[in-house]
Picture (cartoon, helix red, strand yellow):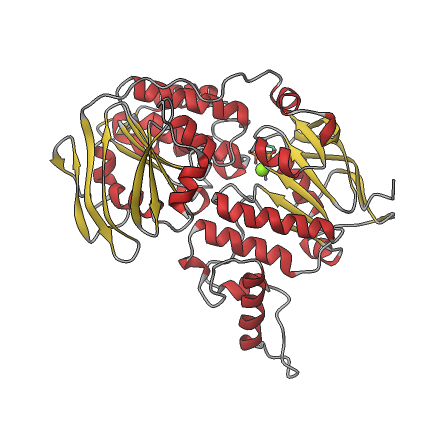
Length: 497
Ligand SMILES: Nc1ncnc2c1ncn2[C@@H]1O[C@H](COP(=O)(O)OP(=O)(O)OP(=O)(O)O)[C@@H](O)[C@H]1O
Ligand SMILES: [Mg+2]
């Protein structure tokens, strides 16, 4: 076997006395995809942020190509040919796509001035080479979350790298864009790069990984060839138990129509959207990124104002002008954009969970704090939200745990109609099973769920019916889980693409 390209040895890290990585070893070889797996909060992102100079380790060493590498900041990592696609997007919203891709290494004219034209041309080339349909001159703020993810990927690929870390790169990508990424990964691997791939999607690990390192509570519990361990083995190491059934059997939905959407339209984003959601039903919404699914959910929730069409709630007009009105009517919306509009990063976990239901927690102007704490505590336990204390700022939780806390917000609010936009993005397998059980409980007790998801197995496994959107239109409605003629992934894709 040749020399490893990179060796991390004995890497240890604590935050405020709380040890999150203890003596981790990780070796990367050229031409490999190395999967780094573990439950939410296991320490994956922290380990990779150390490699990329975002955090400094308390002890341990890093060797690159046989010699000691000192990483004191992101610049050192980039210079050494190490780049990272971060789990939490780091693009600057006010800059253009091109400016973000080349931030810190912009092409200059001989005069030393920034060559804007060249910047745009080169950035557009990078985007097109990877089949990313994004304009280099667009402002990042105007992009969808998925488009921003493509820019993050382009940014990591624009520098000549030896090691690329991808921290849940497909969490917000649709199948089609993920395929494009997998093609890029194969190319990079053939060129001799080492890729660290973090994902909670087993099928991706099975398909991509050459070797696997499994972390559990900040400790390495397995490292070896991918072929030496099967999916069940990976799960057992990660979770400490077997998961037999990911998708529970859903009860039959009722016949009562709780939400009806009629001819809803909003500018160029979507048009002529009509569907009905029944009591006790989970309606899945499939589609490629940019198909308009999130925009429809935002329109129903009153985040944006549709330009035509009607929404009715149990027979009453419900074109909400504000999210407050939608929440009061019993609608909850779990956003896909947890960093942008979801979490209040500096506020405590508890406050993030209770914020949509403060009315129910107060008598007049007084908030019943002990009741708030008790109910939040229940949800933290139920969803296994890993936090040192419920008063910790939510921004310090790992990605998957932030996601769980956002979901808890709507469970806390007791909304009878839930619009869930990518509900399990970044959530580990063990907890996903819990979330699916919760969704089943919600519909079994008369709630209804509209679920947008780019995870096709999840859509197929957890929806009574699946609506497929393409370019702003709802093109078909397919039977989902439990139906004798339930849709297949191929069927959904053929309508979506
Ligand atoms: N800046 C910070 N301050 C305090 N604690 C932190 C900080 N960053 C991470 N942690 C803690 O370190 C632990 C590991 O977090 P990390 O983000 O590495 O998990 P992860 O394996 O990437 O999880 P996920 O799959 O949810 O993304 C968590 O308990 C987290 O709360
Ligand atoms: Mg992480």
